[in-house]
Image (tube, rainbow over all chains, first blue to last red):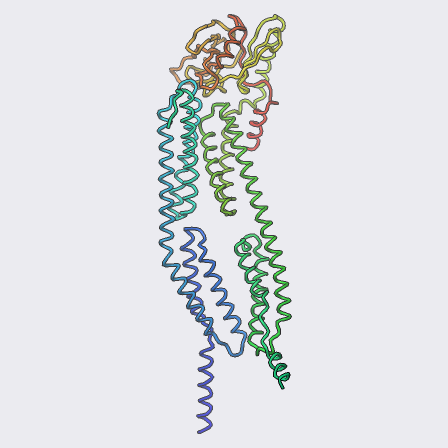
Length: 199
Length: 360
């Protein structure tokens, strides 16, 4: 009877030790999923520097788990702590992300408005430009140029709808520059004929 | 005894972790930042695997009692990995540089094509689909420059492809507009007219005017020799052969000056006898075949006039006033005026059009 009790205590002790040595598989999966989610969410605003830091921390935690796995007496306490801290960091980035995305979106919308204003200004100048001898050819060419800019303008909204806010910003900037260039050429063409400086 | 204590103390002292371990870790960071996972994915993965193995060995060594730790072999491994990592970083930087150069060169090449095509649209007064496509290409190239500055080469490739498509579209449109300039029969006809005009000037000792539409040039011959050459302007559809009133095309054929206007609406003007017999035959045929609007007449009042070459005429030939003075001086009623599309395929513009047509 005494022997049985002794064996039972031994088995329980081993069970307790082994339970403490179990790799935090579920915690890893949860952390990975959370990281993946925050990575996807931040894709709208181009690579976020914090993502690199989070990925590094995950790698470090996995390395620690791998190192412990090779040992006979495994201690996953440190790895669990690393994963817990990483989870906190992911949550912090997740919480900050909407504000970052909103800022990128607002900037893209602002630039879209500026591009539209630049197109409208060029259009207004083209409408009042004298299309007689000396300017007709230039003005016709610039109208065709502006038609190209107007076609490209639709791409900004497509990018915004697709939540590609940085892409939308780049497109809006390019169109704004082109429209401003056209407006400057229209002014030059008008000035060539009228001799009056347009401001 | 003191000596013995020292011996025991130093023998049991824990050796420090080799500094190369942290250096390799920093190098991995540098490689990631340089984009090694994009430019040299396999080598970078190998590097990471070796680093992981090294870190595992390091962990095993650190798990030992301090006095029994030996990092010498591990230090050699880390040094070796440092070397590999630095080589990889150099390789990545070179690749990045090559790619940046490739894309920069390609952007410059496409921008050059846009400039050349725009010059041609200016020359041909093409202000429709060609010009619109070129404007879209310019916007794409502007986006490309932004992406190049951000070193987003994946996106650069895609944007450049769109820009190139817009340029190809412009080239195709241009080639289709100018396709008849590549037709040998048309070219033979124009060459025949031009040759006859110069020969008649030589034989008769007279002045003759030759207008070359594709080159935008008016040449004055006397006794078969060139005496003056001027730049000209045409209408919006000046490269087309005039068929009816209001088509804004410039007629092609052998004409004569029928009247001189010393003070016209456009400075000075020389009226030619459009439509001639050939024009009337072509018009009648086109009308019969329903190729022209039912109400459209054949048109007339085609002149060589002043007012400037940088404007769109309604089918006339425009010159700068100072050049018009010269032409007006040499021309008389009865002077031959021959208007041709082109006289040679050898000139740059036609060669370029031929190239576009081939690519399209």
